[in-house]
Length: 273
Image 1 (tube, rainbow, N blue to C red):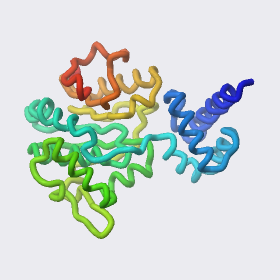
Image 2: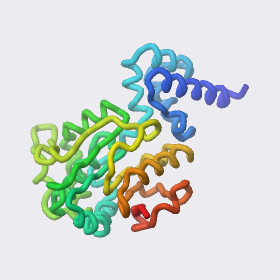
Image 3: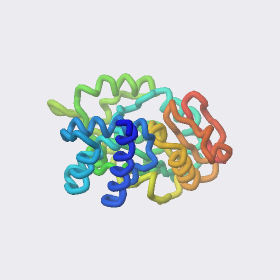
Image 4: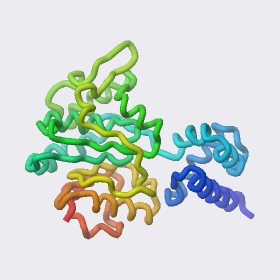
């Protein structure tokens, strides 16, 4: 049997075991992406085979907690892809202003950079006081980081450049306090944010919202799971609510494609029909 075939068999067994043991479902994630992540984890945990890694994960919850860093994507920055946030200001905010109250869902929020970016944008647009932001992810360790709003000080220069390109109306320094090593965001913003565990693979809609922002997540799903996530977003959004995806993502080939209109083709912002 070719080694790659055997690897994929073991990979399927690993993901099935994780689902049965921990109720985290990665079975419909992109196989190519999952191969890369599991190989990195095998190096980290010094496992010669996927089966050896599976043994460690299933028998030691602490190892599984560490493994979540490999199963999920943890790359983000504040105001990442500034043009996206600029498009939100120009195309979405004027509509959000017509509502008495606003709910926003950041799905797959990772370590929170996008959450605080949206909170700052909404504050500058005069909407945060009547907005509730739901920030969800499947990784509890990432959610803890997100909720603290604490980031390395050496990342702030890039965050600030992004903020200005995203149409920031002040200075990013207005939104954090700093010590020798860290910038601490959100102390005047966090009362408008709720952090919670939620899986796009297994969980249901939990609230009606006006904007869903789920960027650079669907690219790691297979077609069936992309359809499931798009269905969740459609169900969660109010009539004419907005959905923002990553620059490399699209609804074009999902089962829900005809249920949305395109607001910004370049920034992948859609509106529920």
